[in-house]
Image 1 (cartoon, helix red, strand yellow):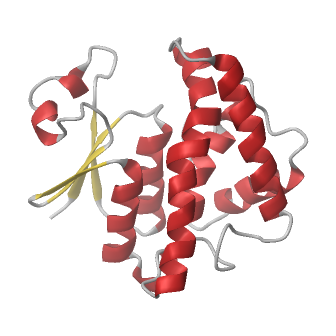
Image 2 (cartoon, rainbow, N blue to C red):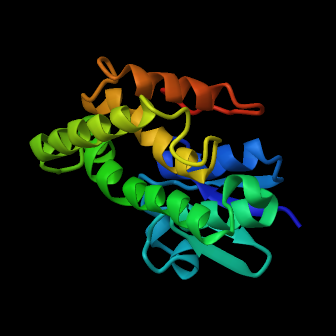
Image 3 (cartoon, helix red, strand yellow):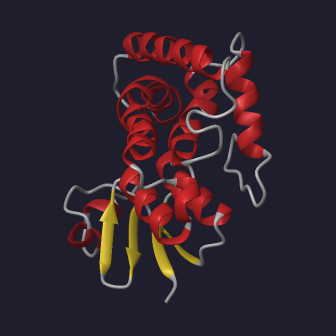
Length: 199
């Protein structure tokens, strides 16, 4: 049975799911959601995700919301140990970056992009300051490592890369972050990589 993704092409969170499925050759039916009309907050999608958000991922009877949780599921079901290990240390090392994607990156580059590209009302100064802070942390990490954890690509990289790479759409370009730029290029060079608008 083919999994389904209720999707918005311009969403970095939806893109994470599309990207990991492409990298792992997971058959995926992509169902576009009319986000501007609020389809994600109406029936039938609101029954699938009462939080009124996308992506929504459906695999048989299982319905998942939240891109990080969906990445965990896909990695464990189709990716073996490589993308999300089960040993306690490796699992924790990868998972800590999922939290960064959900917090520092979401409240930094993502919020800045929501403001500039989509007209959302956010504290743009705070968002850009947050973005500069997390980009500095990523630059230090990636100056010493090819990948965020475990010396190989994992869902840590898939969770964190999109909104970092889209930062220029929120006035947060990657100029001055050579290690981050190189990391984005390494993700783009993965076999079966797919892009999205502006990446």
